[in-house]
Image (cartoon, rainbow, N blue to C red; front, side):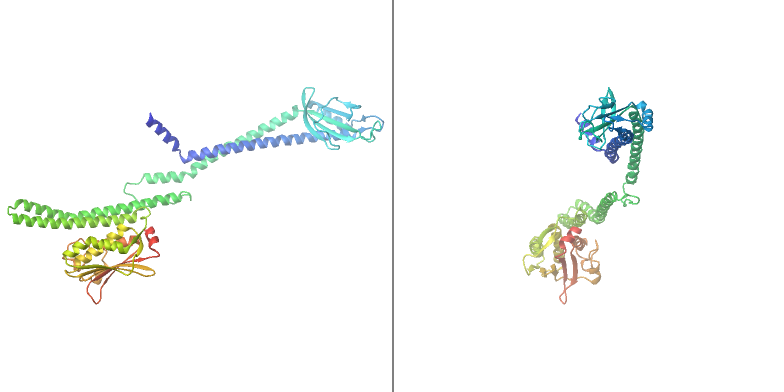
Length: 485
C-alpha cells in the first residue's frame, strides 16, 4: 500500500508541461472572459436603459411644454405627437402624472411613485419602481410654476412619465442572449487556439525527446539546436555540455584501459614465465635469482600502474564539474615534504639533495594533491637520471608576478627533440633507454600543469651538465585558470 501511494504521489507531482500550461491558461482565460461577459452585459443593460430613457425623456418634455397655469389652475394640452407616442407604446403600459408639489392639483394617473431623493428643478430623474403591482421605469421632472398658483411663488410642478418593463425586458433579454452566445463562442475558440498553440509550441521538446531516445548507446554527438525556441536552447546547451563531459571521461577511461592492457601485458607475461622457471628449479640459488627478477618486475609494474592511475586521476580532475575547489598551497612546504619522502631513495644513490627558498611562504592557488604528484615526479626523475654522488636541488623563486618551482639535477640532460616531445605518454628520451620506467613522469607533470594553469619549462643547464625543470605559476591568473580548467 505504501509503494502504491508513493507511485500515485509521484505521478501527481510529475505533471507534463502541457498539462501545467493548460491548467494555468484555460481557467484564467475562462475567468477573464466571464468577467468581460458580465461587464459587457452590464454595459449593454445601461445602454438599453439610456435608449429607452430617451423616449421617456421626450414624452416628459412634451408634457412639460403643454402645461399651463395661466388660467389660475393646472391645465395640460396633449398635442398630436404626444398622443401618437402613447398609442405606439400602449402595449408597454404607459402612465403619466402632472401635479403640483403640494399635491393640491393633479392630472393623470394618481400616486405614481416619487424618487427617494428630492428632485432638482430642471433635471429629469429616472428610476425603477412598482405601480399597481407592475414594475415600471419612471421619469420625473420638477420645475417652478410660471405663473404660480395660489400666490405661492415657490411652488413647483411635478411631471412624471412611467413605462412598463415588459417590452424593455424582452428586448434586453434578446440582446443579452445574442451577446452571451457570441461571447461563449469567443471563449470556445480562444480555448481551442490556446490548446493548439501549447501543443505546437511544445513540439520541439517532443522532437528533442525522440532524437535523444532514438540514439544508440555510444552516440555522444551534440544534440542539434535547430528550430528550437530560445527558452529551450539553454537546456540543449546543458545536455550537450553534459554529453561532452561524459564523452571526455569515456575517452580517459578507454585510454587508461588501453594503456593498462598495453603496458601490463608484457610484465605479467614475464612474471608468469619467471614463476614457472622458479617452480621447475631445484637449485636454491637459481630460485633466489628468479625471485629477485620477479621482485624487480613487480616493482616496475607497480610503478607503471601507479603512474597510469596518477595520470588518469589528473585528467579526471580536469573533467570534473567545476574543475576542483582551489586552495592555497605553500610551494616551500610542499617541496620540503616531497624531498623528505624521497630522501631514502636519494641516499641509496648517495645524492646531495636539498631545498633552496628565497622567501617563505610562496603561496599559489591550486590543489595540494595535484601539485604534490607533479613535484614528486619531477624530483623522482631527477634522482633516477642523476649519477651516484650527484646533486639534486629544488629551488623556490617568487617575484611580483610569478612563482617558480625549479628542480635541477646534474644528470645527462635532454636533447632538443626530447624536450620538444617530453610530455608524450610512454615516450622515453635517449637518456632513459637503459633506465627503469614507463615514460609517464613528464606526461603527468604536463597534464597537471595544464590543469593548474601553469607552464612546464624544460631546459638544459649551461655550462654545467644536467636538466632544469620548472613549474611557472602566474600569481594573478592562477585562481581563474584553476576555475577555468
